[in-house]
Image 1 (cartoon, one colour):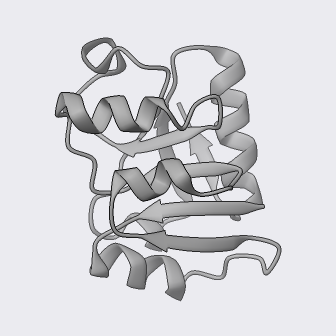
Image 2 (cartoon, one colour; image 1 turned 45 degrees about the vertical axis):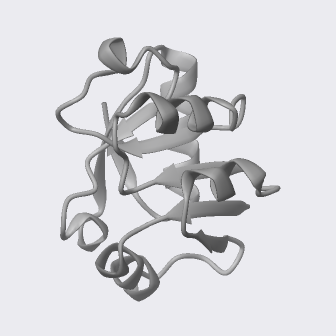
Length: 123
């Protein structure tokens, strides 16, 4: 599985310290625009900002799963079929990931991806 991620230095460090299977290849980007341009299976925006320009760019990553670090902004406010996660500091030190998706099929897809990353999910 190929994943593109936009992350802070601390988040990237936590991810790289985690025992992620070698079958997962991470591509690190520095902007949402680069997320859109990568040929990957899923996109993660760990530094998500709910501004309209970012939301528009991330929506162009669809139909691939798009994960955003958004605890305060709900999917109803964002109005896109993204998958919300809690990626506060320490996120990758835990085995359980909090996710929120618009429907059961998307939630199942997100749980599958996190399963490949050796995480359990709660939604």
